[in-house]
Amino acid sequence: MVVAEREMIEPGVVRGEWWHRLADGRVQCDLCPRACRLKEGQRGFCFVRQARDGAMALTSYGRASGFCVDPIEKKPLNHFYPGSRVFSFGTAGCNLGCRFCQNWDISKARQDDRLSEWASPEAVAEAAVQSGCRSLAFTYNDPVIFAEYAIDCAKAARARNLKTVAVTAGYIGEEARQDFYSQMDAVNVDLKAFTETFYGKLCLAHLEPVLETLKWIKHQTDVWLEITTLLIPGQNDSEEEVEKLSRWVFAELGSDVPLHFTAFHPDFKMRDTPPTPPETLRRARQQALEIGLYYVYTGNVIDSAGQSTYCSGCGAVLIERNWFRLGTRNLDSGGRCRFCRTPLAGHFSS
Image 1: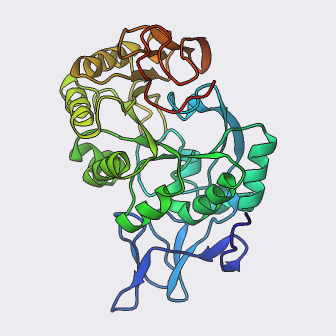
Image 2: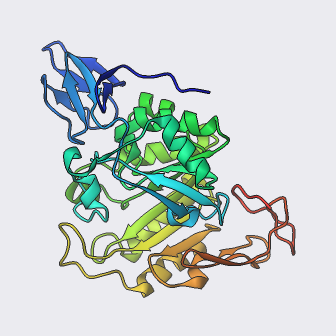
């Protein structure tokens, strides 16, 4: 299948979707909850969407900040064809303003600073195939802001029997959400914290739209869902907040949604904040397990026990991990525990 070409205004610039014109002549972007209202020539908060000729334009189409072959566990996705390789890429810009951004050189860059590689959707998908990858991932910066490009790449990938993966903050509007996730097979949503104060102060965004996205993905789609929360010392790592977050995941999404607690390292505008102690991650993991979540992981630290997958029935190690390296595997060809036959939630192959 060849993806239908979009209207190209100039190299890297296409007509955008999810917008409407206001009575005063401005263009409102409906892609995400920010609803940026733009005069002619103005760019949105994400920088890559611009009002042009009385309409919306995406100015980073086909432009990438780099390509990389990763283990799928790096996304992180531990229950989506573990051990497979994923072809990863991003563009530039972001619709959140996280002061602690770990990819700030990409997400906060102006596109001319970072975007140098041109690749059509067909070329991206073919490169993934030639690299021996099982899936294509939109990552590094949030794919929501380049949704048109991501959707076209996803269609080209699926035509080649590749799976599609989005790594995102889940900050997306209702209409765009349906169009975007209809082309995704798996997603890791970065749930930054569990307070509105944190989202407002450190992300320049709001918590509730992310929670709505999470519930919608889990209950209204077949997209495989995993969640990551970066624990930042003194900001979102208290026992109380971890408990509230874990209880919400258990009550609203279910016990079988994998939850990753990962370590912060000083970066961007929070260089004075210390790294997350490994003990904080282990404590958070134990809290979530005691609440009833089956699959809770630690990340960005060396912790084989916290990164391995265990059977929810008998407690046996099903997939042993050390960082991104896999060891013992005790799954049968149907994705069940070899010892007690309890199914492991996710997507697996022999």
